[in-house]
Image (tube, rainbow, N blue to C red; front, side):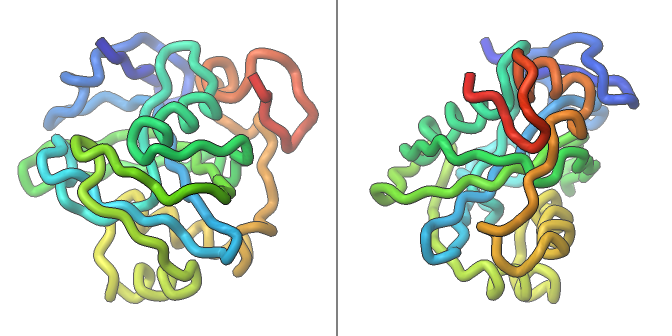
Length: 208
């Protein structure tokens, strides 16, 4: 059974809860991640969530989202989910928005309540092979075009993706040149179980 890491308001781990039961009308604050996968042409891999997802089914969003297991480095959690959901892998995973946090409510009343650091992934490999229980559809889209559509409201995306895009575009027009954030900027729980287990130079994630 998968568990997510519960957090206090300072971003410190305070326990765990099964992933299957954590999302309710009173979802506790917990640790997550979002990944934006780019190819060598600067295109973003966008995904449409599976139609039977518990939260935001059938909605287009960024490349991959998920939750690190207790004591699992975020970088490894991202690679695990990319392999599971999309059949792709990359060692080029960098932290770009270390403190992103959001709260969103579905029409059903189910709540997402996450501290959700955002990572850029550079990928040059075979086409994705989506897992049907996770991803309904995928596509590559020019980053600038995607940003313009999200910000203008012309392109409907998940609520977390909409907020993230607004912050990511401030990092510059070329995703490959975005500044890498230091692990020390992550919330405390992510530094321990999500950033690295060994000290690393600022701006670089552990390769563990």
